[in-house]
Image (cartoon, rainbow, N blue to C red):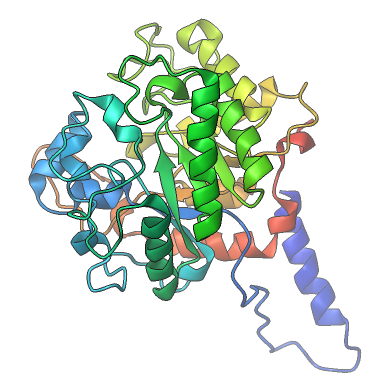
Length: 374
């Protein structure tokens, strides 16, 4: 609220600074022309889940394997002729990262759902992105150049919470530190400034996530590291990739007997960005709002935390509370008969994204930091 008030006051003061000049009919654009510094992004998840045909839609709606839609995350579908052809948001492209989600670093034809330890390589095969070279630094550099040439801020990547080939999950912390230090340095070298850190085998361990943040700050200070508590799109309900310990009460504070919010608090202590995670389209405002309220109430005792909250793909919530967001919607999603998907026509509503991103640029310095709570 204070940020919105600040915007109004800026407009009022600006209109009064030149006495004697009639400004009553002048339209003042308060939105800066330069690219904004806030770490908002478009995530490829929605696009490559629904990109090719209804099989991808059915797979996603039924919470099946990630390897099926990962096949769609390739050069032809994402880059086309090199102009990043599938995405919208021309008016705010320069303000947004594009985060390449699950599957960008997995070779074509690999069913990594039955071999999750293979998804941490962060090195793609030339078959999926033939324009790029088969060393991560070269791949990321070319990818980033193509993204920026298309008018976007930069490319970002999803990073699995594990090291490649860690079949039995026995890598020591020293081995993990070296593995991720190398990749952080590759990101610095190629200008990749956003990591969306996934769960996988180590991602649910706060000590592992803290180590990643420490390594990033020491080796690539410009890197935004996004952490999250994980979980399903409904609070305190069953989900294939989450704990069986739920009570059907819809509350974050009692989910997994309080362990879900406890994990969030532990991560927020060191997170650059903390994402409230997946949410169903029909409840895209009440669920994130509930999560934010519970988390902020729980972290009042953490005055030193400086992280930003990412409220997923809910731009109105982000605009009102001053949070960053991650766009998931995609205009060409087919409709699956009987699914009732997208009853609010979210996939075609881009005005909310554009308006929120412009407002974010105005009051970015007044984002609600976690240290401001209370």
